[in-house]
Image (tube, rainbow, N blue to C red):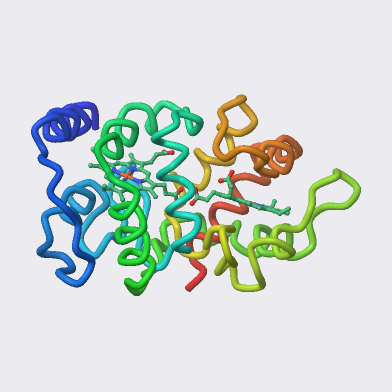
Amino acid sequence: MRRIALTIAILAMVASTAPVRAGDGENNAGVRNCTWCHGTGAQGYMVAPRLAGQRAQYIQGQLRSFAEHSRDNPFSKQYMWGAVAALRPYEVRDLAIYFAGLPPKPANDGDRNLAARGRTIYMDGIPEANIVSCYACHGPNAEGIRDIPRLGGLAYFYLKGRLEQWGQGYHSGIASPMPMVASTLGPNEIEALASYLSFVK
Ligand code: HEC
Ligand code: HEC
């Protein structure tokens, strides 16, 4: 894992930033600058999450927060701060629209035995523990809306990390509700939610 991460980091330094023209798709150099980390078809690879099918407004917002260094968890700092540094606003917009238009595949890598419990928390929350339902914002099928991200089918490890890191004080967007939402979740709830979501198509 560490060796691969190092290779990725070195490649990131030598990767050039060619202009993006969304129409060129996977062969476009600007898109390839992203997909050699984010995987073929942007379906996610190792620690880099799936971008395919993510909400365009959300992608754009996150690229801004990497550029402004407000999304400051270790992997963002290590991989994404550099990857976005040279992007122009129109490239950010074109990449966001391009990745949002790719069909997403579910990671299916959570614990099947926890999925039913995760679904219950996702739909109803746990009122007696002050845990809010995720459904209200992320949608009935975890597909997201406007700048609220799609969660369905993201990888277990990635979802778990995100939910843990808000509790550890890392930030993402300004005025994000997630640090407060995540602060009520214990390790069992996080594992159940991340498992359930990894299977959602
Ligand atoms: C060197 C590897 C690498 C490169 C190159 C790279 N990424 Fe990333 N990207 C990552 C990793 C790792 C993460 C996960 C950060 C985290 O754990 O919070 C990430 C996260 C993201 C996110 C946040 C996704 C989410 O669901 O919140 C977006 C959006 C993103 N990258 C877009 C891009 C785009 C667009 C490019 C090309 C300009 C790109 N990335 C290039 C490794 C990379
Ligand atoms: C009040 C609305 C709201 C509620 C309720 C909510 N979320 Fe979110 N969520 C957001 C917004 C807005 C973002 C994007 C901003 C950010 O990343 O900080 C987000 C981002 C996320 C992300 C990051 C996805 C990615 O691609 O990195 C995860 C994971 C997440 N939410 C999980 C949950 C879970 C699990 C619940 C229920 C326990 C939940 N959310 C409840 C609004 C909400």
